[in-house]
Length: 412
Image (cartoon, one colour):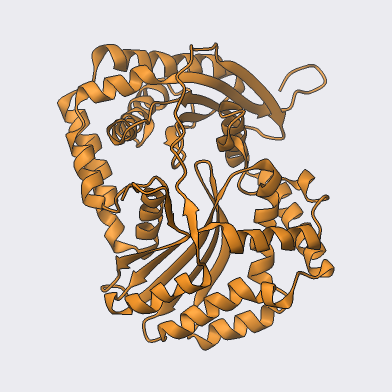
């Protein structure tokens, strides 16, 4: 699916086979670069467009579509922020009615000529409260902070949820101007999981988003000299400490991406992984430990729930385990087990329209061919040497520790 031309249609439509499902799923999103100056405005738009000036009217229209499930949200994918509209309906609902409902959610604000000050201020207060509440989930908060520190200076570090401190400078005029710019200029991607016979109806959405957009060049990844990792410690109200190690990886090709996925699976992807067995089961140093990746980013993280006093030893063991993996390699049995686990997960994509859309949206954002078969073949072809190469390319960027507050004597 990689484009050779310099420009593509602004609205690209992807049709997925949803014949076996009882519902049709329609997902449309504006593909936006993540920037600090627009991230909060986009997140606020999702709140406003979902509720609108007449929330009761939207709810009534959805009910008339036999209880259609719809949403407007922001989703972060790598260095992109997606303003996403979704609508899931029973197949007994006429697709023209589904498209009409979607168009009203999208275009009604433009027809009205703006957002009211009252509504914008109300949704700003709701979003501010929502952002404040994110701090209550210590595990999620630690993950967010670790990403910010590991990816500092890049778009990957920017929050797709927005920032409470940026809300004050947003008003109904600046927000409406930003929405006008999005609708008139931003790239649009539409995914329809349903019957093939409905293709022509879905393609009609292109009429609402005419024009072409420039194909963005893939940014070259600069492999600079390894800098010493940074250690960041923060305190909060929590009994359990969270330790996270952030690594930068090499994902410059599909093969390297597949190798990193398998390395993640072997290192900390499941209860039989190296870190879980060695650090939790054998040494009992943590409550939980796992590795994870963010979609479309070059970062791999290891996170563990620990006692603060065990932070140094736990971090040391993570790095020792990684070094041993580099030296000793991976057994054929372990590699096969990791592959089977990943293949099993991705084979299940065909059982969920939402999982299909999510996977193929990520492929489309990377300019890749929309094919699970090609992806799975790539995983199958990975050999031990690819795993070792992926492990040797990992660069430790950040060690982040979130722990409880000290008492008056300097103790936890």
